[in-house]
Every structure is written in structure tokens, then in C-alpha cells.
Image (cartoon, rainbow, N blue to C red; front, side, top):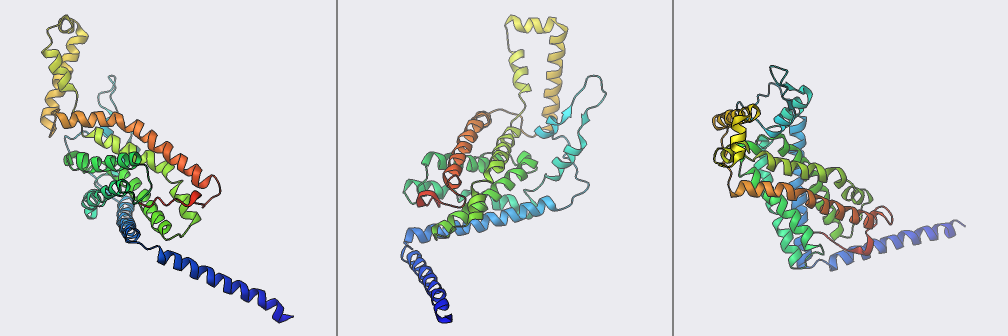
Length: 327
């Protein structure tokens, strides 16, 4: 009786051993040079982004006191949360928000976080090459737009205007969203290449983007917008060189004279306090990119929701169709 009950149990153990052995053999036999390269790329990328995530979280959790704002540098966020009231002698600021903003400033120099970020993110250029040569099955348009926006932000915004971007709290929120997203993504791709499925990781991969994509993309967009010079000098120049009746109307009216006076005064203050207040091709390009950002976010966001329904919609943790998109 006992032998009969033990036999099925032993058979199940042997079958499980055979199944594991077959799976290991399949993985081993499928290790082509391209697959080994992709495994290495995803493993290295996951480790690099995990390190950035650790540093970013450490920075956020590190207590700071007596954080001084840089004199003469009025940032976009400071202006956003400052209310100028003509009935008040001074501006009124939302102190809790200012404390949060100040707390998130300065992460670029924290443990060389900015230096590590720009080179870690630059590795993603390889993902475009992976898609072009068919190493992975991903839409080239989606991959290119995602990689381009990141590379542009790192080199065309953060490194191009360091006096503004390096001390911006938006750099911290952007990097937190990036690093958490990428740590999950590259780990998911690495395990997927080994035919290892994790329900928790699948759920994280196709769920965390819901809050992280808007945080990351909006931080990118407003960080770029923050680096733009003031538009007041342009308005003043247009008005001063305008020979149309509109100029005469402004000069004759009280409101018009006040407008011209305030523009001239603001322009004078900007020239004294700002490092770069000139508009050029790069600044115009950043302004255009700011408006392009939002439809691009919608495109990527809806694409990820489609992928989420495809992967999680037919059962959590299942990879539908067995398509490997590890890039």
C-alpha cells in the first residue's frame, strides 16, 4: 500500500526533474551570439539603472536644512508658485511647496548622479540599432521616439544649459521616474530572454508606467521649458521697432505706457540677473519640442496601455504569443 502511494510521488519528482532539465537544455541550446549579447546588454543596463535609482532615492531621503536659493535666478517653478498681487506689497509664496521644491534641488551633483545618468542613458542608442537589424521585435517609431526624447533631454537640455538644469528639482523627479522604469524594464527583458516568467515583474512592467510615464515626460518637458529665456525682451523689441499705429496707441494710453515701462524694467532686471537671455535656433527648437512632447506622450502612453491589455488582459503574468521584445 505504501509502495503504491510513493510511486506516483516519485514519478512526479522525476517528471519535474526532467522538465527542468529540458528547459535548461532549451535555454542553453538557444544561446546564440545575438542572444548572449542581448543578455549582457540588458543585465548591464539593469544594474546601471538600479544604481541610479538607489542614488536618487538616497538623495530624496537625505535630510537637508538651510537650502539657499541661488540669488538672482528665478526658475519656472518658483514663478509658478508665486502669486503677484497688486494689493500686496510683496509676493506671497506657498511655503510647503517651496520646501518640497528646494528639497528636490541639487541631485545632479549628488554622488556624481548627473555624470552617471548621461552616459547610462546614452547606451540606449544601441536599442535603435537592435530594432533596425532585427535583434528585437519592437516598432522602430516607438523605440526611436522614446530614445530620442531621452538623449535630447540629457545632452540638448541638461548639459546644454547646466546653470539652470543642474539645480532643478525637475531633474530629480525625471530621474526617479526614468531609473525605476528602466530597472524594471531591463530586468524583465533579461529574464524573458531566459524564458523565466515572473508574475510580479510582468505586473510591474505593465503597471508602473501608468504613474511614471506622466511624471517622467512632464519633468522632461518642463525642464526643457525652464531653460528657455524670457520672452519679454522679444516683445519689447517688437514694440520698439514697430512703426504701425499699434505702437502709437500704446504710447498714448496709460495702460500701454505701463506695459512698456514694465517690459523695459523686466528686461533690465533680466539682463542683470540672468546668464543667458538670448533666443537662438536651439532655444526655438526647445520651445517647439515642448509642444511636441504632449502628443508624443499620448502616443507612447496609449501604446503601453495596448501592450498592457495584450499581456495582462488574458491572465496576469502571461506573455501572450511568446514574443520576446527584450531590447
